[in-house]
Amino acid sequence: METAQYLWEHPETGYREALGSRHVADKLRALGLDVQEFDIPGCVAVYNTGKPGPNICIMGELDSLIIFDHPDCNEKGYVHACTHHMQTAAMLGAAYGLLKSDVKDKLCGKLTFVAVPAEECIELAFREELRKAGKIRYYGGKPEFLARGVFDGVDISMMCHGATHREDEDVWMSGTSNGMVGKIIHYTGLACHAASPHKGINALYAATLGLSAVNAIREKFEEKDYIRVHPIMTRGGDVVNAIPDHAELETYVRSASVKGMVAAAKAVDRAFVGGAVSMGCECRISTKAGYMPTTVSEEFTGLCMDVIPAVTGKKASLDPHETGSTDMGDISTIMPTMQFNVGGSVGAYHSKNLVVPECNRESMYLNGGRVMAAVTYELLKDGGKKANEVKAAYKPEFASPAEYMALADSFFSDKTYKIDIE
Ligand SMILES: [Zn+2]
Ligand SMILES: [Zn+2]
Image 1 (cartoon, rainbow, N blue to C red):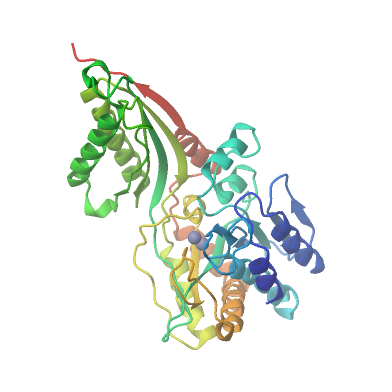
Image 2: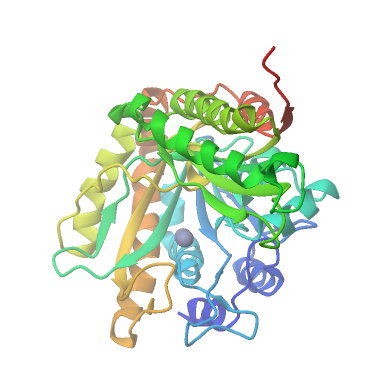
């Protein structure tokens, strides 16, 4: 409860979570654990039961959003309008519940507690700066920790996320979700006086043709791939009496599968370049790795859906496919993961109205930790029988973090197209 309140009152955005990270590290140290910290926010502590067995990771995210008109935001607009404050508290709650009771004597293997930075894919310019300076490799905290070896030796991962209060259930399971890549599309034309447009090359028109082409290729997308492309224009001319020589678009390309994401990203590039070809413009497309699609382990989900009602006394449903994206997806390409929702907030997520009313705080903040502790117990009792079953039944997208990184790295590209028709 104290941690949730502290984080709510000290919101920090991705890769800036110095206070939150220190707070969590101190709490983990208070449990007698060795805490590993980094040159970026976030921390890891491993508890070894001393008995051989699987390594189960419990995670919490540290970062806030920026919403200037939220009543509880700080002077920089930072506010936990995605309730990450409660998930990190839940991670600590699970750690305290497991390690401060005799339950731990019935467990085998290892418990890995991780406070991860930077889940929200925001402040991209700041993250690009960090990446260029060699301080991070990926925009998302989980892929970054994956690259730093934090998940080496981990067999199964879990975390919870806050959700809007429901009458009939307190905790329910998240399903699969889309992955995404981010793109900046820059058109370069030729400026001239707008009264003699034949002397210029209109970059704005190239961009609008590119947008039309993207809209036309939507009919090529298949329902099963859940493709979402939602471009915006961030630049389209500076003064009204000049033909714009620069125009810029940004978009995400999302899909439910890695294959779908790669194919859609290529088709979208071709459409954007088509706009440039029409006008004789140059088109530069800069692509950034976002997050991988989340796949779900049926065995793990089944286990959790048995455990949740025993903890909450209420039913637990499974959410349908979510077209948004999270970097938990990246972890799910390597090992079985699960994420569940803990109801209690009111108002839309990522909006100025999101709050956790006082009357819901205790149940919301405690339920996450209770469920993760109970699930961990089920996984690691009896010599880790269930954990081994969950692991054996899961077919991850990639065989190793290195294989994952090879594809994620290939998503970072800068390509310039200038195509002339003879
Ligand atoms: Zn969010
Ligand atoms: Zn979130």
